[in-house]
Length: 640
Image (cartoon, rainbow, N blue to C red):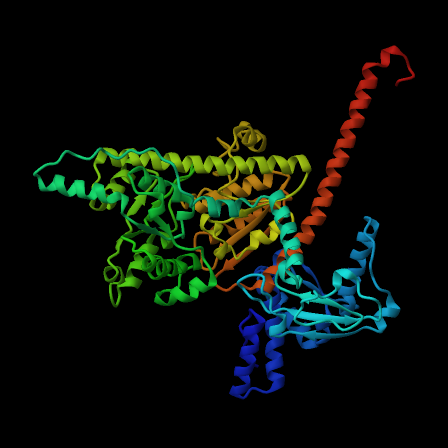
């Protein structure tokens, strides 16, 4: 049989056509499809590479199990995962495999009914007479956003009068027939209606949900690029002099207000942009002259990634496309004089007792990769009169960092060492103000969750996964379902909160400080991985938080802490989910299925959490009443 690569069904369809051209028979192609199915289930959709960790009992359900070739493929795949284990899996085909989903829907319907929901089911007699037609063409294309997605209209004829809510819009391109009701299958909520007013109502409802459930990942992704208001620290202009060096410095200082600097929205700039923007602004570069590339999109990647000659992780690959955006979009609109992207060597970290705070080596040298991509045949920077600045920087050593920035910017800005150091201080001040602001809002959101006894999601990932183009909008999907979202870099560090979560361990001598991870991760050299481990500890200890780990394909530094993070979270009974191996492909259907599944689980988990809280409150009330009676017992036996 031919070997299919697991993944998107679109690619599988393409493979089928190719295998037919190569002469494979239908039965052989079907055997190959059966063999790849368990990989699609466990590796692509469920994202569970280690099937053995799920347990030893597997129940196969769904109508697909009527195909015994599929059953054999799934059984073989599961058993292969236990080959090196002393355990043996028990594999059962559901007695009513084709109807198992319907049985589950019935059980869920009973649960909703018992919780007060009422049905609008049209009845079995009406169902028997249902007729429908589907349409999917240019007349069904959604025009409510720039994506212009193709939708499917399912027009159902039940023989009953159509309700107002299901009627097609009077101006619909595809009118309904008498007695029909329309169901629209779309990729987002806005596409589920036809008229603009209905779409606006849906959008208003989504906006209200978002306002009530802050997404700190999205807030951080946008606010980190805002202009800062640092103090002006530039030296006064030197007096006119006949000395050439003085004349040159005066000219460079006068040119600061005209200098236009391009900065790509990539990598660790998602954590340190305020430091560099405030540094430049304090020296006299206007905020409007600091030009950032656009946010990551599929269109940007396709337009600018052709120069890449290596295949690292997606966050590194997309950097080349961001440079293309700066050079061929921003620069042509209004010329840039330089593009700045430092090579981050050592980062800042609030953690204590770690061995090092290094950046990822791939990320650190990505600016060099960009230079190679844009100079290997023709020097694109020189062609467009753009200076490319990519100094190595060490943010943990303030003096070394000042020297590195001085060497980078002195030829363009005419710096003195004194004003350079003052600008460095302004940069770090702006960075701390930004971090305090975002963490303050995170604390407010966390306090709200505690008051309302609700759940929030902590995105355990690197700072550049704040980029919606890298996280594929996963966190927004959870926000739309009513979950506030945090990231490991936005969790609050208030002393009272850290005392509540970590105080007992500090006093017991397990750790020396709430920001100490030496008890769970001694090989602490990578700054972002260290922070991920600490955020996992924070999430595991807070009853209103659950963990969602994100990681890019080929992330060498995340891989060693996968098991550590998962174990920390799950040993506390806290739910843990993950989206690993994210790359430039955005499997929207797979993501949507997983988000819906996680949401359903979290709803049940939240119900249990609230029941537990109510029980605890009831017990505390009864104990207080009992203690009050004991205190008043001396007044007479009736109270007791």
